[in-house]
Length: 250
Image (cartoon, rainbow, N blue to C red):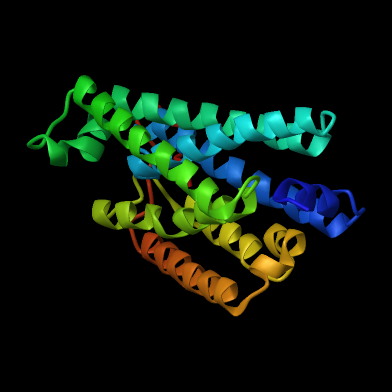
């Protein structure tokens, strides 16, 4: 039984817990990127460093394509088709985030200015984005080579690890809630809790791979980091309403 068939067997077993936990996991994942787009539109700053966006594009577009192919191969399997469509939607949100990062001067300066003497043109930013994508796509294919065909669960847990540890460094460098806030900080805690426990979709689907002390130890470390980030953000001054009078994003 290959990885695709293992996933099909798990999701076709009538395990309601797996369905519920899977739905919550995907919901929180989308919520994180809705926050990203809203913050970029309203505050013109991203809650995630640019390399996270490019990594996620490489990961999610790869699996959108592979799950579409797998769905066709297995008689248009509805679970695989849903996962493919979900990852297409993620890719759209990730691309929108990158477009806005390049478009807004202060966001582009923050993300790329360090490498170009304090400022960066749109062309320079785009070149760096293309360069990162050129590195991350081969990395994704190397992971597939290491883990084997259909190794979605193996690479998806890496995205949860990155989401836990990556954003807070940017928030701490800013020293404010601008481009972030308590809402996204709590989302990180939620996604970490739902991903690294005995009834996560990873452990239920592939217990022989993920039901190990190292998996839970990594989860404990990620949870400690996300809690630390949330506490740090809570100590930053609260946002104030803008000149348009709109309530700031929490």
